[in-house]
Length: 322
Image 1 (cartoon, one colour):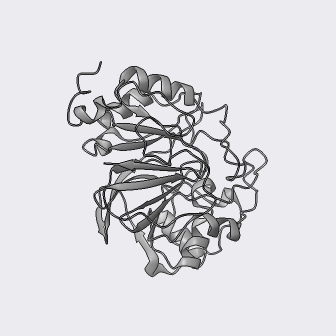
Image 2: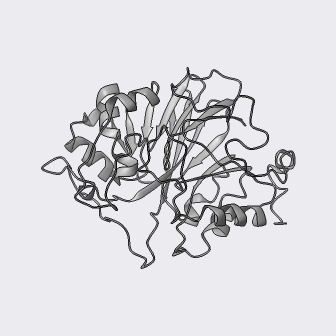
């Protein structure tokens, strides 16, 4: 057992020691979680320390608590791309998006690839909500008609206080393929002359992670890709870590051991970015065989046996407390 296991949150972890990974909600999740897929967002929960996390597939989340709703990487349209063909046209499904985003108070964007960014311009324009992201994220949103007053540019290291919740920003890294290359890398230094039309028009624009806490609920680290910077995660110590799954290519050195250590062996780990994100969000999640979900689970059980593992399901709320 890791020497740090019974550290800062040891007594809380002990209550769920050895909890098995379940299809939807792990042991210790409040009643109602994992019962049936939610087809409509409910009202944001009040106080009392409970936060409700609804997985929107890929790395996306609808987070509700303390009367607030925060969206992270909300990609709901989920259109086919013919093997990630960069010429694939961007497509938005407004009615589907409206059905599943609730009434957001803020949108957080990890990076600009379509499976994280695609639906954000529509959400920002239709709801008038502020968006937090990199300079590239905000330049693209401006090019797509979003009011600059709605945009909050961050770099990593910021600790932002909003009405009823806080957001800590950590500079992070995007995952790479077996050749250690990025998919559509690059950043923008200003708004593009024309709005992007294809998935290849959306560069990564650097990658961020966000730690969000609504009221006195649990702190949750939201990651958007399968790599990170250890120094930037040190000290965050989230109650819940939504850890992006690495590919079976394993191009990142000791990804799982390093991220667990950097985050002080979180009390709860929820794997994300393992589903086939071109299948409808309203269907059960289908594992992408190129993503090493089994490896993430096995290594977490081995290295941090007190950690509770929860495998999320599309649109199924997880009720968690601090």
